Image (tube, rainbow, N blue to C red; front, side):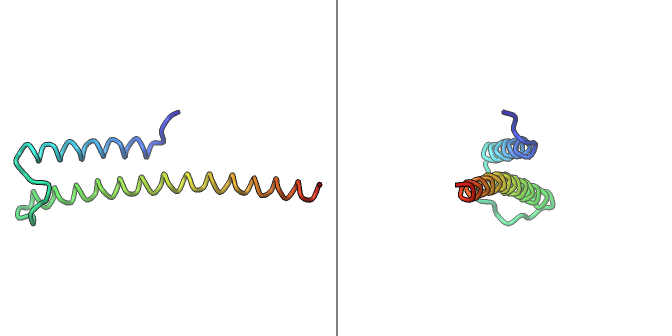
Length: 88
């Protein structure tokens, strides 16, 4: 089954963030970032925040899609039960 485009992008972004974290660990940076001092560090922090926001948006979109499918299924079940109640 083919994954939706937003999940593919989320996976790609997640892998990119993980790779960036690994590069940071190899460079000797800890997992907890200090307050950025240089403009490069500020841009890097903004980039990581944007990646996190895209991952969150993707997760919420996927959950929303699943909830819409469940809603459609429940409506179909209610219509079927109403039909059976009227008929029988």
